[in-house]
Length: 300
Image (tube, rainbow, N blue to C red):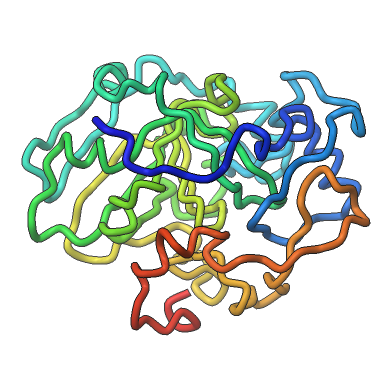
């Protein structure tokens, strides 16, 4: 399966791993950064004392394990990730339950390292290990009437203590339009910095859509469904005024409670000069045509 997307981000653009590891201190000291887009070249790692690998992901959103930022790190080890399978159903030629190890054996994942600008609560460039979602969909055989792809997170109350609280309508669900899903930028990630994704970050399989905000990157996927109608998404169901189906990075459309027009790159410190957030997180050349003719203030 050919690697179809050729990005311009090089190794020297990647946010230094030590800065990535230390992002909790940066975010905590900043009192919360605005949702971000483009990341510039990271500063030298010695400017900050790096955290250990055990501390890397202690600042997360994964509400199935609790709503505090520390909860996923504290409790996600209860999630059993091996063996793992993904059900692919709906409008596909070959529906069924696919073992993750069988999927990966066909994806030559060790050759797939993607350098993407990250859209979370900070601005950086992250090297993801993974494969294009399109490869998985092509393997299952997308039928001609399919228009959307729906995703579902695993739901195991015995392992996920947070689902005992009705914070969201469990299980967590997300969705993309089919052309978004087939875009070569859309990734199913299994690793970061060449290491397996920890449980609290969505092991063993999570979505990465680099021109959208981070909550679109559904974690611990167990179901992928092809459908002809727009699927529900968890945050849109919870608060449609604030979270639209598309959730594209768009500096011209503010979140109801804050501006999304500027960003602060990680590594520059709290007083670093803010930069204008780029439309589609800087990936306009690759994805803007997907939204030709759409009113993006309505379809946000």
